Length: 131
Image (tube, rainbow, N blue to C red):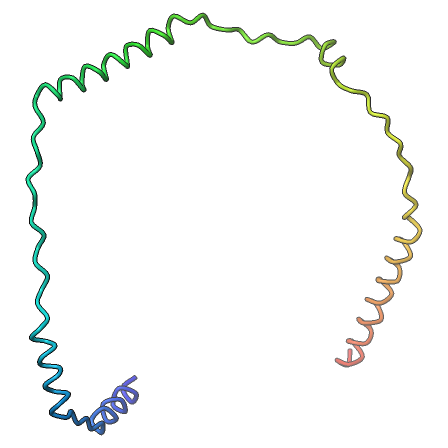
């Protein structure tokens, strides 16, 4: 990295930059015209009366009590377990019309052909290598 850094420094030293007076004046003018943004003025938050805090707290407590009372007064519902006979009666009977696929012969032939191709390729590679 030292050679690269030295080369980059040498290249940077050879760069000659000339800024015209017009460009220099334009840059200075644009820098002078730019001012930092003013910080936004913070508006004071309005204070809510203490009654508002009490009212919202009491409303929340009343809602929580209402939910607890409603949940506790309901009778627990026991799930009814269906009998096995009703389950069997509910299952529709499917009339399967299936035939045995006769693919064993062609698949075996394809497997034999693939094994033969692999053996031929293996022999060819061994001959190329010289084994």
